Length: 308
Image (cartoon, rainbow, N blue to C red; front, side):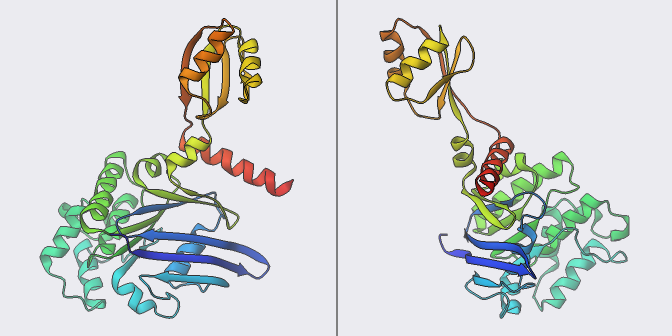
């Protein structure tokens, strides 16, 4: 399960003078879940449309399942599914009729059992024969996901899949995506603003801002890089001076709190240095920020660096 399903190398896209994407790299492998995150206008939807063959990149190369999606879109769509928000559905058709119509359009030999299984997976089995006109927005999102599962793809691309879903449906979606990648090796790429869910679900994330890559890696790497080491000690000012004199970048926050860079010193070493100065170390712990805070800090740092 280590073959690449998506390969994006140095991709750029311009709309006149506006740069929507600038030298973006991305890889999504089989059995992996990757998230696109970033503020509105960062380039997430542009990148998804390029992967779907709806836009042609201005520069760089794109391969989806080893194919150029712009030139070979029909072949890509045989094994890749794209669910854009909001979903485009027919008000007069039932959920089951949507899946039957899709299977006929794709000339797929899809059984009624497969259709029923897809609807069950997304929690719509009881509403399979109801018209979409009666569906809530969250139910429409579920139907869009069911459509993306028939027939089962090698690559699943989702745009804001949690929009309109209640907390239970979000949990069910998370479990479904994990089963697809774990049991069937489906590669999943999703764009989402729901960072709490992103942190719990994805293997890696790509943070974009104004079309440029700000970060690409695991949520743990991003949060760890923004974390800090917190010490509670008597006479924080003198403790910080002692640590600095030994080459550690420490600063006192108040009379009892000292902070250092994450993982910059071990507990035993800190206790040795402070104990040698007659200072008692009361607490020693890593402070890990939320993914949202870490993303905001990385975005601010990137923007400050660009404006400097």
